[in-house]
Structures are given as C-alpha cells and as structure tokens.
Image (tube, rainbow, N blue to C red):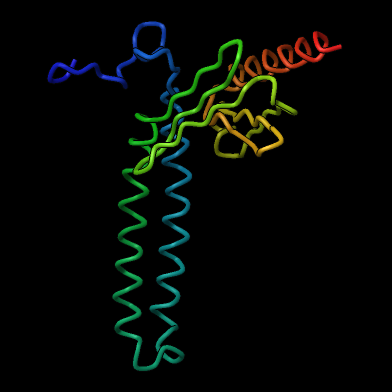
Length: 176
C-alpha cells in the first residue's frame, strides 16, 4: 500500500497484480531497450547526415533546422530510455473464460477487451529482436481489428494461443 491506496502494479508470488492481471517478463525490457537503441542510432545517423550535408539545400534555415533536429534527437533519446521502464511497469494482460484484456500505455492508458466469442483468428509472431530474447506476441483478430498481447515468453504465447483456439472451437461447436 502507498499512502493508504493499493499499489495496482505490485506483483505477488504468482506473477499477478492485485486485480488479477499478468505482467511482462524482465526480458521484455531488454527487447524494448534494444529496439529503441536501434531507432536512436538510425535517428542520430539521419540527423548527422542532414547536419553534414544539409547546408546547401537548407540555406538561411540551416541553423534553425540544426537546432530543431538536435531537439528532436534529444526527445527521441529521452523517450527511448524512459519508455521501456514505463511500458514494463504499466503493461498488463489477463484472459478468463469470457474475454481477453490488455492494459497498456504511457500517457494515455488503453484498456482493450475482446470477448472470446468475437475472436476470428489467433496467431503467434516473433520479430528478430523478440526472438533473441525468447519472446513472442499473440495477435488476436476480431471483426473490429487486432488486439496484441506483446512481449510474452514464446512458450507462454503458444500456450495462450492454443488455449484461445480451443475456447473458440468449443464455442463454435456449442452453436451447432
């Protein structure tokens, strides 16, 4: 408890928050940091190229453009360093017999809820960075769009996808 309030982000020995959500694995932060580091390096390279070779085509606006680019690069670097920690702390998901819920966000927190009966397709995807850390995403497709549970251990992602597929098949058989 903090100041008489329950800490919603505290995790118990079973890996659950007070309100029954699962949190991300520590490897997810490493994956986020590496992805952000790649973005920062590419951004720095672009800024460096513009600063080195942009004088001729920026003309009188060169100095202002350089200041703007340095500020933009600083914002990208600060965001890249801060975002993984906040995302790791706030990202939560849970699945029960009726629905899948995902809570995420930094400034604006979104709470996505997908009724199991609305699920059309479930697949597991691994990008190259996540694969390095043994992580995967579960993509849940509905008529309204796609909800993704990100940064799960690969075996957990496969288990969630399998369980969801079983629930959907069971619901379809019950309708017939």
